[in-house]
Image 1: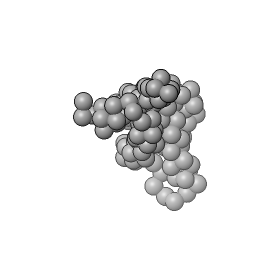
Image 2: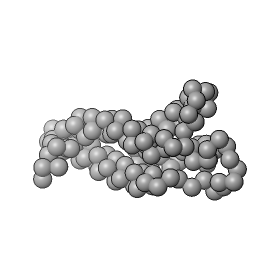
Image 3: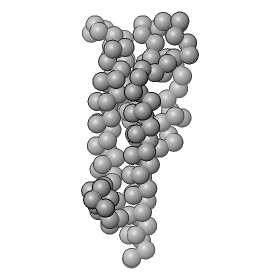
Length: 127
């Protein structure tokens, strides 16, 4: 009940789960960046900037359930998981812990979107 109160205020406010969902983008971006750090280009090059942008896209794309897998295409995964465009790593294999973080992120996002919908339903039901 404490987690439900902290994330959704017992279904009374849609703003609280929306804020948690927005905050989770930053938290999971740090998680993705930490897991993918060994694969990131080390020099301050254009590839390093593109890599950071791709990690941000993954974090933002996975914020809404069922949208992330649709927006993250194979070329982005190949760029993220294959260091320096190495073609020998086809199919691209994510580093350890990445898939677990994606699953945790999807479950949390589904719960928060459900809480947003529940709060909106409660708001319009009361009025």
